[in-house]
Amino acid sequence: MRPKLVLAAIAVLALAAPSLQSQTLDGDFMRKRTTPSRAFFGIGLLVAQPLGALDEQIDVGGGVGAHFLFQPARRIPFALRADLGYILYGQESRRFRPFPRIEAELDTDHGIFFAGIGPQFMIPRGLLRPYVTGSVGLSYFATRSSIEGRNSEGEDLLSTTNHDDVTFAYTGAAGLYIPVKKGLRPISIDLGARYHGNGTAEYLREGSITDNPDNTVSFTPIKSQANLITYQLGITVGF
Image (cartoon, rainbow, N blue to C red; front, side, top):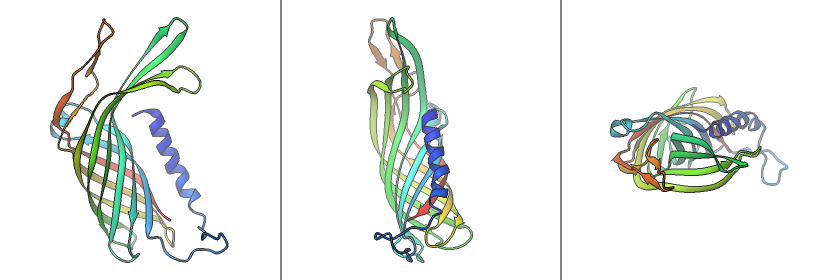
């Protein structure tokens, strides 16, 4: 997983909890809100374990996920949940000199974007709050190459998508909320595991791209079942 992705996710997790410890004010910023949270936002780090045919092609990946949760009433065990995330399952890098005085780096990322929506059932109160959830949505398999300048900013100078594929996806998950701050604006640690049924997808992996001597590029895509399990460690906050 790219260091920038890991550092950004850790920074969000580290800063979210203390910043949300302060009490939230109403729109007029003059009086404290007294209604409990019915909407929640969560973010977490993911470890992705490929299954079956996908496990024969790629290694364990990592990424970040986020979700939005709306609970119609605080004390009922039902909520509507929307998820999205990104999994990086492969990366290749090499440095080269396009011109005598210019040094650049060619990075290729193999990743999966996913998004879905569905119900969540959970225990609304208690020291430990287990939940189950499922969704229907899409998974987007994409391999992207970019040229990064070797300067202090490390900006991408050029980028292209080498190969992509979209599949219908369904998921099923179970997890556990561990409250660390109760009250009207609760904060909880979120531990969970999610099965991603991605069906058959066409994708690239490390080694699927060949740079030919005549300055052309060859691709060797793989088509297989692309199911996986993600494990999450995150934080969920009410607002």
